[in-house]
Length: 307
Image (cartoon, rainbow, N blue to C red):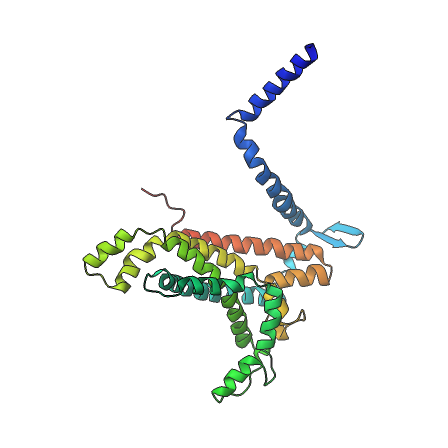
């Protein structure tokens, strides 16, 4: 009986501890903290330490800032230029176009809006590897490739799409637009549907046109979701790798026109087994992405205190 009483008391203490308002928040947050520590913080710290080392099979030596000094070379410059240019163009493509399309799909006058929503979202469900292979065939250099066939209809000769810097960037942007426009439309649609209809009705009473309502009501109220979409687009632009890798079938692109920063990490770390140098590239990319994102958030006023 004494043992049963002790067990009962222990159980009650454990229950009170688990149901305590002070402990409960930490219990609920613990899974996130553990996953963050194991899958993000530890690899990041490990990569930071490795960036100061020369890692060879069976041999690790400390080299200080040597990896960062070697970072500033022609290949890294080309990769950073390509990633930055791709990020800028995707911002120009994946922000205004989905916003306008979402406004059309949110309109009560739009017929078959549910059909168009589902159709535009389908590309996001497609494997990027499969999409890359298909687009490599579409932008092939042969006369029978789809894009060259379209050019022939307008009397334009065939192009070697993946051998030119500007044409290959166009191919990457078409792939990005095909894949991500539908997702961004859903983001903007969710924000549009949260705007009170009374605001538009009041504007109509005042005689505001459709464009004026869009500029004076829709755009300002879409600001939070627009900032979010811009942020994830910046991250996605600098993190782009698979699309470029698949377009050139895993081979080096001519004159590095398709080399990205993540592609350079893969090349140095996993093809040349220079893990220390690859880690230095990764840490540098993290710093660049963080700097660009902070600058963007500062310019959009996200860090200003509201009255």
